[in-house]
Length: 216
Length: 216
Image (cartoon, rainbow over all chains, first blue to last red; front, top):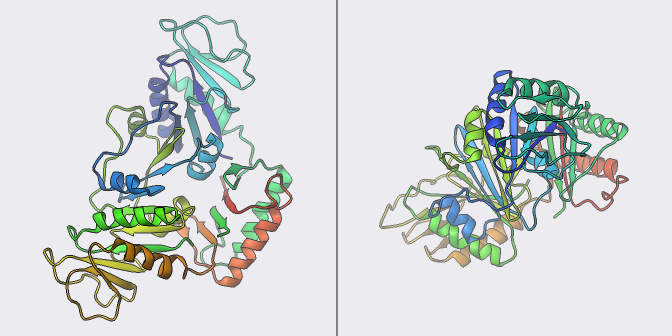
């Protein structure tokens, strides 16, 4: 699984601004950053009247747009997808994925707390909490970074999240559910699949394998 | 590979309007439709000032948004991705993918030609051309549908594209390049991977397997 860290904190605490600076800093250091934002209230991203909007409205379950610089995919879901599923399927090519707004997830967390806004952490007692970014004096053994110390936060993410992530490199999603793999199974699948495709043209030195098997 | 058909025709020929009706009809018949639109001129989908826009601008290579009804992914690419790659990685869960604007691809094609706009097909001689949707009298052995005959076009797509697609159910992308598989290799990979994961919890009856292996 790709290394994941979640930035949490009350609405208005400054998560987005911090994240913006941390993304810049991590990108500067050569890391590819993926962002997953949870939007409890829904969002509109497509523009009314555009082709993609018309096709979506006509019933297409997925609409993708591709150009030379980027592409976009908009997909309807029957119920909200688990963040692990989205990350496995759509963000697995990042060096690190930072999520925003998944307070109850099991991802390691960094909480943003701004005195002018609130002095009570939302994550106290959470085993996954790894650090605070705050101007509040807190009694905690966890590292505390100042609100503007984006370099400190980026360094912490590199040290404690990206570099500490296990060497597991296999992501498996079965019928929409991410499947956790023990090291032995991880090895078996990696070696097995790499071996099976090795003799195919252009696959002898495969570094990134995406495989999808679907029964119709 | 998921069944694919490309709607082609000059700009202004009526592709989007036809597509809209065909999507509605296929959806009504129970098919899950994915759309891939090629935009030679680039596109803007994100809204300036929004969080996702800010994160993208800060350098995030991928930004994903998730809500209860849908999710969206916006991704930067260094050079344009082949449509096969996007389809393998992002649209493989559709029953059929309809592309718009990939004139030179090898997908089976349906050309839209509207007399008021042009009387010369753009795809003459293309081996992949399967039908016309037009009000022009053409000398051709291919089926011709009227401009408003979206039911005929949808039926044609079901008969000639969805149902005729080979039973191949394995999509493989290696280091960003889709890899074509001969039936024997397809079987080997499908049986091999299904066998390896069969004993994992919840995987004994797997219908849809997504696997990603990445060397860091």
